[in-house]
Length: 218
Image 1: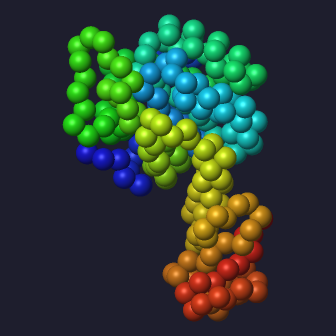
Image 2 (image 1 turned 30 degrees about the vertical axis):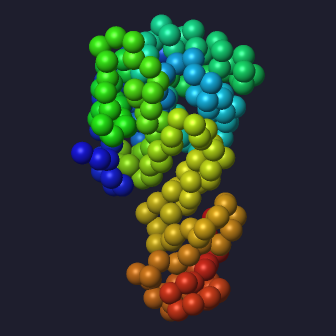
Image 3 (image 1 turned 180 degrees about the horizontal axis):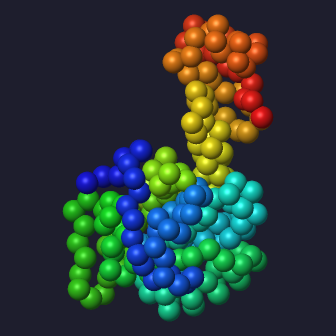
């Protein structure tokens, strides 16, 4: 069964480079980003883990935890981290889950259609779409998901922007327009009347009766 927006993110217990992780406990009221990979020591994934390491200060600023998932062992993850850190020039201090059992990949519906998992000799192609991003809220619910093919490296600037948009609209009657970045105007939800929106948020930029922009309250 697929994971949908507003589903409670599946809980799991797994070994990781930071010890045993009980996912819901580990969240501890934070936002979290789960990003998964089909194998260690693969070229695209090495660049992606490096990008996440370089953004450590940005995740912390947003009170967001990051956790990697790869279908290899903690021992392999530890060796791979040395490559990641050498490539990125930054410490990869976030946990990397040991998902050799594919427990997390299956719980989060990450495997390819009609996948085949050989008993021996498994290659990245067998777990190709274990290249998914989930943003999970402090309430443990899935707020956003993205899935990439093996040949396309993830754009972590976009993932960071999407996280900003999720946080900017969480629990308030706003949405963000195309290409929105922090500091730009937001769209007032249709559930709020123009009169009420003006009273609460000040002057509106009304492009169409159903498209009304407001300054986002700080």
